Length: 340
Image (cartoon, rainbow, N blue to C red; front, side, top):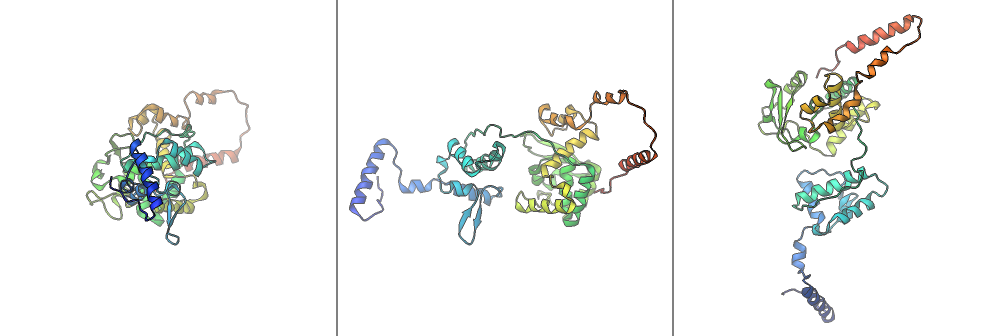
């Protein structure tokens, strides 16, 4: 062993030597140089952010103080990657989010830590907290709400409007839309190709005519080879843009997220296009019926329509009511205001 004690004080050097000998005998000794060569969580997190990783929940660097604030970096800091195990991550989740639900802890601790470790080449099978998937909920937009959202987006950023249309009328995940390249689009065939979805499989995506029209008007054109179709990245700017558009479109759209637009596509495919669960699976957006079955409640079953046969009391004719009912039917039959 050839290792400096790092001190000029003889008594301290002797103690260092004694400790080193004991650790060598136990097979535990590592030189300072070797220890420094082991990457820390901070090293891995910074590398992850530098390659475009999502910043949310990881941390923000304060230029004035020269320190990191909030997020995972403030908790793990210089901890070596080899020391980060299941227990360390469980403790981080409890310390950072003591009152949060399992789903929140999973989204804001387990998922980003797993992504950082994987990029650093560390394979750690993580056990997620019980209940981490949360309670399955399906939120979707009514057509009129989507049209208002698109109108607001078009006024603020035409490319962002097309991006939202793409999510709404294809049902693709946010990451799939962001990763789509121009050479994977064929407007003449109304077709887009996703090379690898979250399911691990490729997917051919049908582009409805109205969406094709919008894509053909892309502000930067589509003859850009392997360049991304959309200029956006999954970062704070993208979410701030969505927030601004929602605010302009109306307060009732506060619940809308990028993933809600995916739910909207599936719901509309059931309600307006008439697909059943098997039909949704047939679009290849979902891998099994269990995942697609969540949309079964968004349509009225044939059995429940039998309620129209139940006996009812006679009512007097109400001309005002008839007039409002007829006008309502006319409203529903009108073409959507926003055509892309």
